[in-house]
Length: 304
Image (tube, rainbow, N blue to C red):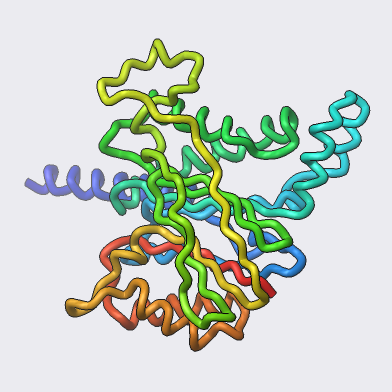
């Protein structure tokens, strides 16, 4: 009996060690404060509130083109190679930053594995995109979709929104079954209606129609249309936009939904503050409203 109990304890210790090791790896891909993009005229801040304090399936990634990449070196290289369109695109990267937010189905610690896979695949793809086109194009997401279709179960899908915010307040984004951004207007003092974005199936659920290898990717459900880019404008000074995961939409109290009315009240109270203060105010209010039942992630983008 003692021998059996000893084996069980040993197995539990090994499993605990493996989970701690996995969490440590996953923590290193979570964005830190220094990775939040810095752009003239814009204030940005966002984080994940993981369920039960554990790393889960939500993930945020930032692409500060100016801090992450040597744009000037890339521009000089493209000039020497006579790639004038690439030069122009790289110059444009100096006036924008990328924000990606994704949600893996489920909220277990191990769901962070798919988030980590997409994180690394995305950033590797960005390097090739910058070298080939000078900016991130829809092609990257077509390739990600194909890769995940071939390597993950349909039951473990990923919703994703990736957008680029420009210094003039324009936000261009692509959505794979992800909730659309919301905009709080300083002028109207409320959340305003924005055009319904074009959205596509979750990453990895349908092979891309534009994939040259699609004949090798049989799908009884058909194929996904090519991705399209949507656009929203933060027109006025003080306008606030939130990109978020469905944990925020589905957050509920005692027969009361948090989104959008309670969220709008918080934005009204803190509209004059920084993106960081607004984020912390929403986070505090969400946790006070009720105990979350899912990971909750959101990014605040404020036009100054």
